[in-house]
Image (cartoon, rainbow, N blue to C red):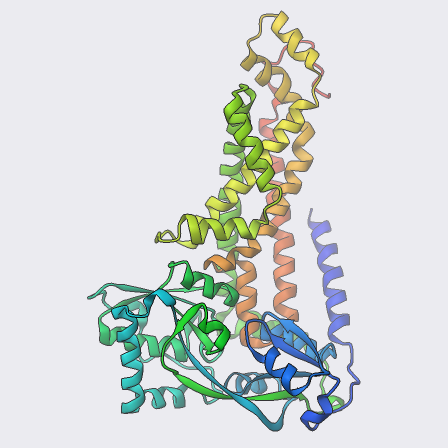
Length: 503
């Protein structure tokens, strides 16, 4: 097992370093006019694509879900420029000194907090909005803006939101902790301009804060489903978003520019040592990875155990031949085989438990248990159907009941047959947990995204996450093999004499 892991990791490492060392010989861009036929990087969920189409109708656009991927594409030459707002880009330019601004302002953008439209006349919305207006008039808002929009990420919150008393209740807030300086992780804690401003507001209004981190493109759904009260993390006010959500008064105004690589000849080679230092050592980020590994393993192992048990029980009930139950199971299987796992998880989180305070890890375990139980059920059904019916009939002739025939003759032959597929499904299960970032869980993949949002480097975090997944999968398979070797039904002395246990 160890040799297999090391060989795989070596291949991944070699390919990644080769990619990192690739050069980019694209021409320089000094004005917006030079970008007329260029490829522009756009962050998903922003209105910068519409803006780009107006300014550069002949330009091509590529979409990215985070800044790290966008910057990686810019450095590798997949795109020639990025259109974005200066308050965020000032932090990126500090980490990426080869970036340069095309000094022609494209436009402006206002940021605000987000509520569901049903909160239009709600006292909570009005109270929060009144606080923002008050802070704008008394200078508090400007002071916080000056504090956070200076390009320095190493800061502390004036108010520890985790200690606020719930005098008037608790406000549920969702954010994406990958958007510096609005919301990001520093010293393993979520901080930022939005977080501090909400802390001031909640302290004044007498609310405690329940803060959850999730993927940016899941924030609107989190609000409209009623799961959370407020969404933050650099939400720009757009006409399209106004159709589905309610914005507060603006909390910050930024300016929009194009950003390019200024001098490609001066671009230094990639330093993999510095990259891994920034990924693991700086700010004790290895603790984030340990947290992500723990959450991933908890979800995987519990879903594996519970899903195996429930899937086996479902098959036993199905085997009884109840027409109503069997028809229901056939419909469920038909749906599950066509439903993307991420959709199932979001249905469980935002609809089934939409108003519940159950945490994301528990809901993820429920969702993946449902998924894996169906997998186990199908494996059992396929495995048993592969056994000749004559073996059942022979067992009945010898006086065995249906249950004894199943457990002592059929299943000992089924388990060895389906074990290979079962272990493959375990690997698929641990890989599938990468989507739980959509339901507020900081798993291994989500932690990798958080670290990338701080370092603005893709290679070390992605490579590290890939290797860790490979190692975890091999460890789980190793454990399953050990457990199976002790419970292998072919070793059961109560098997019917004469059964070939190697079938």
